Image (cartoon, rainbow, N blue to C red; front, side, top):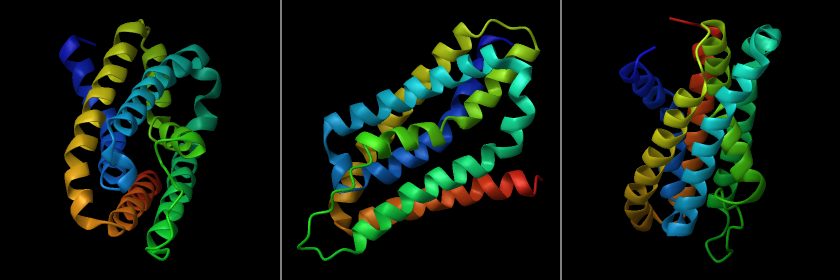
Length: 187
């Protein structure tokens, strides 16, 4: 695997995290630089860590993960998405307390968007490549793209108000459904 293939792989793996970053960036929580840093850092860290973990576990768990990865991602994204949608429908006088860039939501989103990177790590182990360069590139590209996505989306979110949380939640649900359908009915 050459450098251009690794960079292409990194961009491909980052797309789910970028889509989630766009959704979160459109909410009122995504407007701060701290939130953008937290989300982009954690997404990059998980996208770096999961291939390494997959590489170390290698072929031993491949059959279990491949059979369940799409369901895990679907439920994790669906859970956080529904929380955001419910918060968006709350009375506008009530402040929503669902900040996707903190706590359990942050970890859940980071894990849900990096499960496919775990499978890539297993694949890299099967073709006997060193994991460190691909993992570093995958993590860096993901982090950078997520930062850019959140900073761009925050301008849209400012105009949408509470509707942005609903939109962000719908985006997360849509990504979860897309992952589920693509694994259940491959093209």
